[in-house]
Length: 59
Image 1: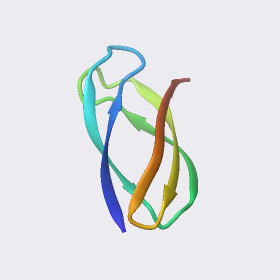
Image 2: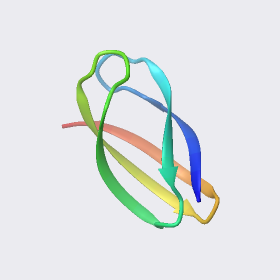
Image 3: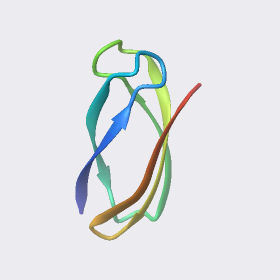
Image 4: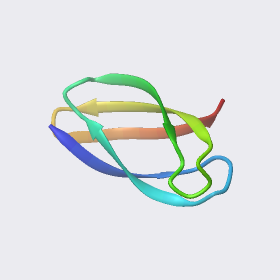
């Protein structure tokens, strides 16, 4: 199940929605900021249908 969560870019500070597949309990992936286009790593902890934590880290 995909759930939308709010994340903040570690470079420009802009917050935007990010869709996460909550069927995977612990995730680490790279995404690009929707505003400044710089890539950063995302760490997500999930339960089915719920995002427990969503953290952004600059690479």
